[in-house]
Every structure is written in C-alpha cells, then in structure tokens.
Amino acid sequence: MRRLLPLAFLPAAAFADDAVIEGATAARTGGTWTFEVTLSHGDTGWDDYADGWRIVTGDGIELGTRVLLHPHVDEQPFTRSLSGVTIPDGLATVYVEARTTREGWGEARHPVALK
Image (cartoon, rainbow, N blue to C red; front, side, top):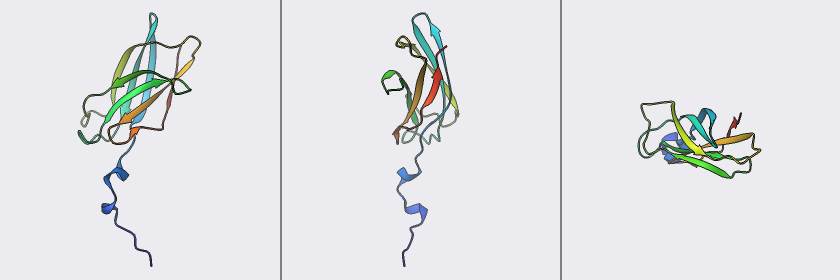
C-alpha cells in the first residue's frame, strides 16, 4: 500500500508562486516609452517577494527591466514605473514578464499594445 506524505512535509518551494501581472500601460514620451506595471504576489518578506519585471519583445528580447528592491508585504497589488525604454520601430506589442526571489522569471506574459 502506498502512503502519502502530509502536505507539511513538502518542500517550501512547492508552495511558492509566480507574481501576477494585474495590468500594464505604456506611454510614449519623446523617443522613449514609460511603462506602469501593477503586480500582485504573496510576498512574505525577504525570502519570497516579487523582485522585478521586464519588457520583452515577442521573441523574448529584453528591452528594459525594473528591479524591485524590497518586499511589498502590506502593499498588494502595487504599481511601479519604468521610463526611458527604447522600442524598435514597427513593434506594435510588447510583453511584461514578472520575477520573484523564489521562482525566478514566471511563465506568464502580459501583452501591452503600443499606441
């Protein structure tokens, strides 16, 4: 007979989660773009928090990264901006990807239309 371990015995990483990209906007300012991204994550402190997001092309080329330097345990969801992002001519959509200290870059991509 096979015995199952109680959930309490699973490694902590099994309970880690990706940051959720709640929304994102882009605004052109001169020759560059400013992005505002709203994230939510079950930040628990310095060991597990959303620590960044980036703007990438459909091919995964990184155009800009916003590093988040501290946990946002009591501020969920939260919005941060990144200015001065250069977008290649002719690109109509970019994507936001989020990162956490425990999971690294998440698989989710949030599309942002460039208008």
